[in-house]
Length: 341
Ligand code: SAM
Ligand code: SF4
Image 1 (cartoon, rainbow, N blue to C red):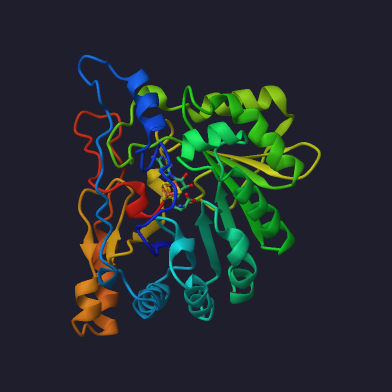
Image 2: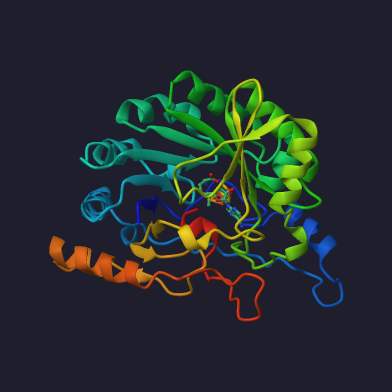
């Protein structure tokens, strides 16, 4: 294991249709896809049960877990959530993690809505790379996808990030059949024009209301075919065997395209990632049914050596692969926003 994803909060200011689908527009979209007799009302009214704040790990606790994880081989840290920029003073955490010897890469995934007010301070604190989620370039479709009017804020955040000389600024889009699949080419144009990396992610069964359907997944191969029809792309060979994306770049010009296809072309065999949830559980797979608590040890006087051997034991039971599409597949109880994507 080399890569630890740290969720710093389970809260979010967006309601993405593929993660926390709760808006009337999301309900209408799913209603149009579901059998109206069997499932007239696919989305339920959700009472949000965010974890009480004292159940979330403090910055000191996160720093301790990261330090121990690094001592046993973790090199890359990605801060995520929920929306990581909602965590008060998250830059203080970035500064602490950046100072840990052995952290070779410190990144964040954000919806970007609040990035304008935080970008500079995060860069100064030692954040190296940032990935923005951007599923649509149309204000209307953006609202349908995310449940919020926020496209211009996100675009401003992306421009700010580019001006701050992060080591990489990437864009992630989850592609959903019938909602933003017509924007595949325009998203690539947008990113390539700015010399950025554009990554397309298959819709995974990790939404809060368990309304994922296979028919809504646009297979990575199809995304690639469409992009190759529009752009002259050449493969990018990576020396990282745990790379999740199939990478391509324009034959001439800057930028890159990545396709992440965990549903139709799983890459479990070389996965080197584990996750720490905001409430102190280790997850060995996005699709794990069980979680491994470490908050008890952190708060119960556990020594570093105890935590270290606990981490080793947990990694030892990491799943071989996910079972999406198989009869025994069980969607995890918690959504991507709680797991930390
Ligand atoms: N809120 C931040 C954001 O949206 O970038 C960080 C957390 S979000 C859970 C991390 C990533 O997970 C985002 O890129 C998002 O698009 C992706 N994601 C969320 N739900 C997903 C799903 N059901 N399938 C595929 N990707 C998903
Ligand atoms: Fe959207 Fe990220 Fe919030 Fe999920 S956690 S609803 S993907 S912004």
